[in-house]
Length: 305
Image 1 (tube, rainbow, N blue to C red):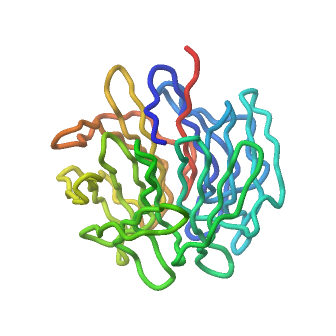
Image 2: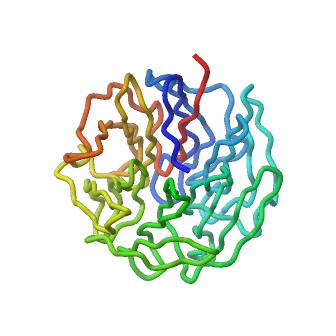
């Protein structure tokens, strides 16, 4: 589910890569506490991981899959507890993967859809329960660089991506272990981010099959309509990470890192989110990442003040 974090929080940014494709993969971690400057951490991932899936459950961060080196995709999982003790679990998944779509369901089980490895795009699915991981029914299409979000009605939406042949404009729902066509965006996109809030999905940046884009759109789940926003990214980017949280009564989406078409980015930018037009408004954000990160994973987690 998409749960808005209020009061005390940490933004945790993990892995990624310093270069294009699968070069310069990272295992470092940096954290922003309550929206302050990002701080490099002394602890790190066991493995370098570009574009892993990331979840938070039972006060633990779960980091799944990712790319270690060019052509080397991981089927392991790392679990980081509240004392920063990191345990690695090898051979959890049938295949190594990166660049998957992922989200959680109403029971906070992790869901992983598709991805990519040395063989190409994947159509596999996994569900991460509290004590085990199960492989699900394969998707009806190969899919990487897509996004997945879960609504308050526990409906999973899978947006955009690449099917091995083309950049997609599709909006699917995932019900009863099957992809179901829902609608289309007015543009093709992959390598973007999608964030659910108040019955709409905010789609930010990405690659449209030709170039990186600064586009921001909202998909309204009740009407199945997309609205292209006048608000845009300051820097067009793909392969970034996005988190949503509430600070001093303001709902904020923070965009971190990514790839601008030429280089990995440290740059972050923030938007105030409202339930009516203009929906997103650019606001000042003074803190960039310490390392340039192409395809990092990021998650916001609650902490006690």
